[in-house]
Image: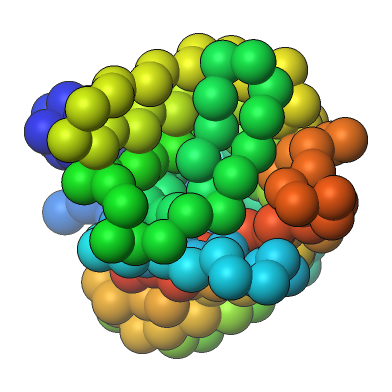
Length: 224
């Protein structure tokens, strides 16, 4: 999955080269910034039920396009509205069975247990930066919200005896939304996403409602 996302990112880079902020003939005073994005994320889950923990590396990839709408003459303040794709994986100890049963189990009782999601996302950002028509390295702070629709999800649990696969989990909350922040200089930017609604609806483990939410920390790259 990561390899496919990197290939898509390279294609976007090639496409972006057909545009430029400036060229050797004139300075484009109506330039647009940071319209293609790509991030590598480390995925955390918060609002954990008792006994829940993550194990191994839980990673994700996001990529997409954001239309930049400058709000001032200098064009360093803007509104961004985009469309993107996200792949996220969570290694953890919440066992999901195909009969709708959820169990928090000991890490010693299984070999692997992964929840994977695939989503279409709509980021909306308020953008501030120190860019100009001739500046390619600059500071930026982008903050806003992100709406997402998880069009596919799956859980895979394996131990020494069983392999349990569950696709399109009934209790999974397909519509997700949260707060975003991206800040940094030049090519290196820290990105944060905090989900405002739980991953599951009406899912219980040991009689307790599961209220897990996303908290993703990533390294964001922008093009053009």
